[in-house]
Image (tube, rainbow, N blue to C red; front, side, top):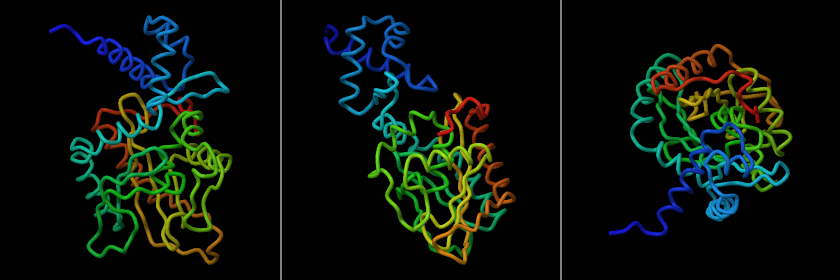
Length: 270
């Protein structure tokens, strides 16, 4: 049986997605055509089809293309299978036994944090995080630990307007400008903190896990009980001793998966 006329187009579309996945930042259509040896007209046709399906996003101001939310969702679906969870589960168990608080592993699902694993101490406190739960990534420490390692245009594509910033408490970033400032701070510090952004009376410390290309693959977080005197204002705690334990677990998971943490200058830092 001969090859379907649709197969070459599918193959080229997958080549475009593979190229975009290997690049740290969105790139122009001309660069895609050059690197893949495609005619310019064919390249734009493929990009338009991928745009319509949500696998590619277009940044008009920069005249570049990057991976879209559908690509993130596809990657998230893969990560929900055994490899990541099987490797991470015992590491999270050890982390819980060390710090005595609930630990979880999250991934990005579009502009949300999706929780894959949660390990709890013998007497856990009730939390809204649980396996399969999705929460706004700009509010969660696990979400921002990953967002802080994404190129700046990717963050902008994930948070295109006010509707992308739902709030759960009076705290947390409400605009893209506020989110970018927070991501820069957390990228410099090395870990993310959420103090009452998701649920009043709880705080979370999180650090990113990286793949072989130095891209954020997941994030490890630990949640503790914490009250600030003023519910509308943070106390400013960052819990460096707890963060050291979380970062150590994230680094071990990165190494076990064959990943690598990128140099600080390699990311767009939100």
